Image: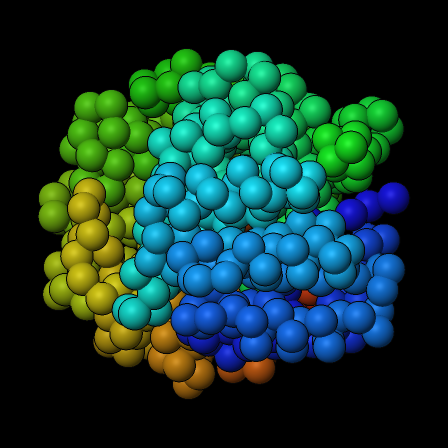
Length: 257
Length: 265
């Protein structure tokens, strides 16, 4: 069972993005033999209020359940965000997304802390996105900073019940966070590996040894990036079946229990 | 066949202790994904003794010596670009002549001097005369100067290409950072510039847009630093339903037409 924790549908504000419909996503998943995907709304990070995007996401994704699961966005700086979180939980969302750097929030500030703790009470993971594009090609108005390692360390220390899925991070972010945490704190995090370099630099292979293969999970970033990126990393790892199974879904399933 | 037109290797002088491992991994992973020719350069001492993109005379020679040695060690598999620093113009020309005579098959211009600067003219003329391509490092849509390099973008490279219509240029790493859409706007009608698809960027729509803009005969496959993203783009290209001849052109045919005749035989 391959589960992709980083996919999107909907419009992206900074360029015309092909392949952003659920049907496009499913076609790519078929091609890449991906069984299920967690799906966010690509406009939501930049909306002042994500509720409309969440409704649109539900309309787009619901017909394709259980293969696609909507991951709604919660903006913890807005009044009543607790209701949005509760609604996501009630709808059976496997996780919620939040984007402090795009929403203008301190990524380790009180709003984020409250969301992470509330999500922990509901036993629902929070998905955080380090970047959407390579910073060198960013639109001049796309000035949101990268998700900082210090904030992730801070959030990971809030509660042993917290669950944070960190997507689109690179080797250096993973190391700076992981080795700044106790093993119990580090266990609150699961890293999606699509932006971590493969060979010959072998950042992913290194992290699987130094951080451990239980801390990583599969994601593609589709449709921002072609899904072949993550699949190619797995191809070239030459990992035993058991490790591949952990990286493509088993870690996620066990960690979420 | 699969030709990587944009590969790099390291030497003992590079500021990294794992340089042999990285070189060996490139070759081993290359075998796995079917690379039949790595056309590679070494960028000086990778910053150890002079800046990566502004190599000293000694570092240029060190890198070209090491690249030549790698080609000798892997005949028929590893081929060399000669690196030069155009600011040291006489040395650049001498070095290029010497290395091409010694078997290197192209010239790598990185970011020591803007591509449209007249200082590059004698190097482009030499490349045209010798029938070898220039692989030119490009920052896709360079909106400003970036630290550590005097990078060029497609507009600047096409000025040089326009002055040297007999020379063949490879615009480096469309996926290597910056706005590739800007580059594609520029390159539609510049017949002596090919696009290398290398770089870590895997944007959806990039490969389709490149195909639509310049067609499959002006795209060449490459990996640059990350072989995994090169492999990913190849996988994706092969899923697009292109005619087999177009895939073959991107994998190797176009490179065979750019580099000196028969060099990959």
